[in-house]
Length: 265
Image (cartoon, rainbow, N blue to C red; front, side, top):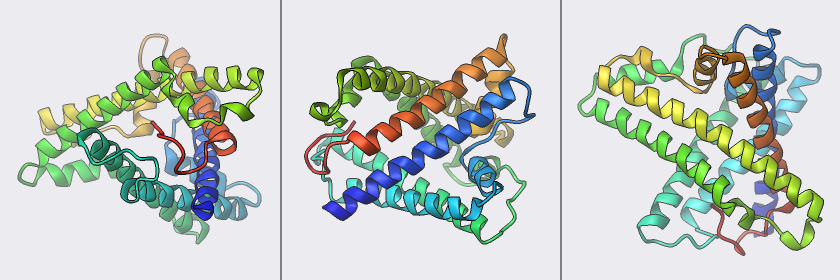
C-alpha cells in the first residue's frame, strides 16, 4: 500500500510539527514570554498567524488528513496484524479514536485556512456539561478518564520496554542516530504519559463531582503543571518532552517500517 504509506509518513511529519509547536509555546510560557499554554488547536492557529501561514497550514492539513486516514486504515484493515482478540480489538479501537481525533484537527486547520474565527469557549467543558445531563453521562466521562489514564500508563510502558523501537527500520539507522532517537522517544513518551494521565484524572473528577469545570484539556493540563511547586520547571520539562515527542514523530516519518511488515505499539 505505497500510497497509504506515503500518507502515513506525511501524517507523522504533521503530527510532529504540531507537538513541537505546542512544546515551544509551552516553553515560552514557562520562561515568562507567554501568559497561557495551548493545545493542538491553539498551535494550529499560531501557525496560521505566521507569514505564509495559510500555505503552511494547507501542507499541515494534508499531512494530518493523511495521518487520520492511516489510523482508520489501521483500525479497519489491520495492516499491522493486531488481530481480532481482546487486546487487538482494544488497540484497533484506539487507532479508530485517533483517526477521528486527527480528522477533527484537520477540520479545524481547514477552518483556520478559510479565516473562520476560533471559538473562545472551552469545548471540553462544554462537551462534559452536555454529557452530565444525559443518562449514564457521568459513567461515560469516567470511562473516558480511565481511558486517558491507561493510555498515559501505556506510554510509560512503551518507554520503559523500548517497544517503540519495533517501529524502526533498524538496519537503516546509524548507531548514533539510533541512540538519539531512543533517548528522544523515551523522554517524549514519558511527557505525554504524564499529561494524558492528568487529563484522565480531571475527567474522573468531573464524573465524581458532576462538575464540568473540573474538565481540563491539553492546554489546561499543562497549565496545571505550572501551578504546582516548582511549576515553571515542571512545565518546562513537559514542554521539552512534547518537542522530543515531535522529533520522535519525525523519526517515524523517516525510519518507520513499511506498512504491513510490523506490529506498531
